[in-house]
Length: 523
Image 1 (cartoon, rainbow, N blue to C red):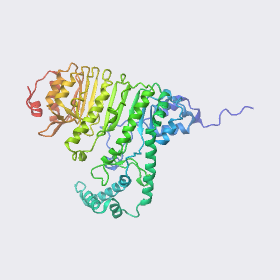
Image 2 (cartoon, helix red, strand yellow; image 1 turned 180 degrees about the vertical axis):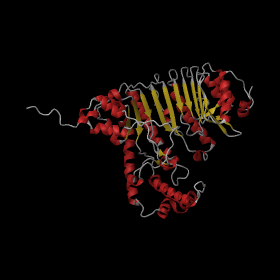
Image 3 (cartoon, rainbow, N blue to C red; image 1 turned 180 degrees about the horizontal axis):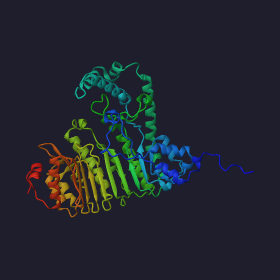
Image 4 (cartoon, helix red, strand yellow; image 1 turned 90 degrees about the horizontal axis):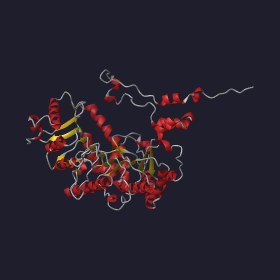
C-alpha cells in the first residue's frame, strides 16, 4: 500500500512563484492629498501610516531560519545578502576566519566594514556619563511633561533644562539622578564599575586584533571568497540617535546608541565622536590593507570618518599600493562637530582640522581622478556651518576630474575658486548644493560659471543662505531639459528668484532686478 505523498502543511508545497509573491507584498500607497489623518493618526500621537515592504529585513532573516522553503530561495538570498557587514570585533573576526560564503557568493553586491562599539580611548568617567545619559534624558522628558500640564501647549518655558543644569553643577551627575529618580536607582556603582571593566577588556582585545593584523587576515579571507564585489563602505560605529529606541533599563551597563544634544548634561556628541576617532583610523587602515591584499576591484566607495580626525592614513603610506583607477563613485561623509562645540574652537584649530580633512579627500581624489564620474562629500548637509571649505587651498588643491558627471556637497564653498574649478570638470551635468555657505567670493561668480559651463547642468539647491542681509535661503531645481520648480509653489519670492535664475542659467535672461535684490549688482 502506498504511503500518503505528503503529511506536511500545504505551505511547504507552494511553488516558488507564490513564495516570492509573499515576500513582495507592500503596504498600499496612500494619496495624502485625498486622505486626512484621523485624530489617532496625527503627528502628535506618534502614529504613522506604514509604507514600503511588509516583509522587512528582520522578517526575511527569520523566514530563512525557520522555513526550509525560504532557506535557499534565490529571491530571498538576494534581498538578504545584497549588503553584508563585517565587524572588527573579537567574536565577528573569529566568524570571518572560518565562514564559508560559497552559498551566498552570487548574491553579495557590497561589503560594509564597521568597527565595534568598543573604543580603547574610553575612560571610566566617560563610561559613567554615557551609561547614565538615557536616565538623565528620561528625567528631563518627565520634567518637560509636567511643564506641559501647567503651561499653555504653545508656551516656550525651558525651566526644566535650567533646573537640571543647576542641579548638575551643584550635585554632579549621580547627585542629579538621586534627586530626581522615582524609586531606587536602576544600577549600583559596583554594577557600573563591572560594566566598565567588561567594556575595556573587549576594547583592548579589539585593539590587539588590529595591532596583530588578525583583522586584516580575516577580512582578506572574506574578500577572496567574494571576487565580484566592487561596492565598499568603510564606516564608523553609529553611536548617535535622535531619541531612545529601546528601554535603557534592559540594556544594563552596556554602551548602546543614544541621543546627543545641547540639553544633554554630562555627555555630549563631541565625547563619542572623539572616542571613536582612533578606532576609525585603525578600521580604515585595516580595510584598505585587506582590499589591497585581496586584489578587490573598487568601483564604488563610501568613507565615513571623524571630521576633525588626524587622518594619519592620508600620509603614512596606507594608500600607496591601493589601485583606485576603476573607482567611479566616491562618497566622503565625515561626522562633523555640533555648532556649540565649533563655537569654542580657535581659528587655528579650525584651520588645522580643515586642512587635514581636505588633504584626506584630495589624496583619495588623486588616485581616482581619471575615471571618477560621481563625487559626494558632506552629501546630507547636516553640518552646513562646518569649517571645511571646498575647494581647499594649496597645497591641497584638488585634481582635475575630466569625466565627473555628478557633484553633491553640503560643505562651505570658496565661491571664486569653485567657479574656476567647475571648468576643470567639463563633463559635469548634475550639481547639488545642500545648505552650503559661500565664502571668499560672490554667488554671482558661481552663477556665471554654471551659465558658461559647456554642459547644461541639472541644478538642485537646498537652503542656500544666499541673501545675508535678509537671511533668506534659496531652494530650487533647474532642469535645462525639462520642468523646473521652486521649493514652495505658493511662495512668490521663491517663484521670482527661481524664474530669474532659470533664465540666467539658460542664457535667455540678464541680471535683472530680482537677482540684484538677492545677490547685489553684477555686470
